[in-house]
Length: 167
Image (cartoon, rainbow, N blue to C red; front, side, top):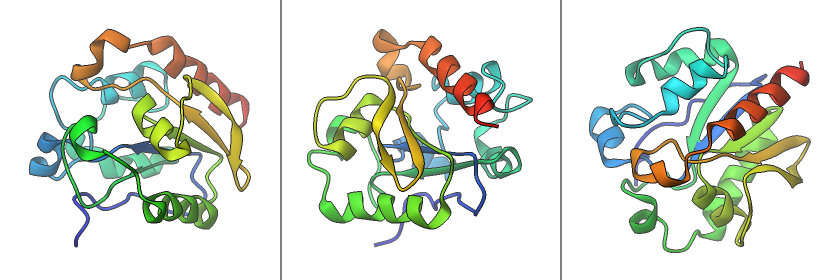
């Protein structure tokens, strides 16, 4: 099976942002976080992780800012509940392997669902005690419009501050 969206990865990244799976709009447009109600591109700019607000079709430009992208599930698209009934060991292993290979300073899951599925249990927002190799791991609130009720931009700001503090 082919990936819905190809990983955006290279050596020497500061951050890899990991979603659950591509949403249906993102899959159709072949661009990460493409739904017009998604706050992803806005929060990256508001937290100064990117100097300007990029558009979904500019996602490859994130590499210039030391940011890569991936998803837990590469071969399916849709909402978290529909896409991820149970994460497989192979999907967990794939992401761990990507982190070991590319060794970013930070891996940040872009939803609590993604982080909890990866760790196979309840987790809260913020930095996790677990490392993958020497990569620090965070769980951030979802930027999806469907998750507006749990939106907490301050966690994204804390994450961005930690990224800057790490150099």
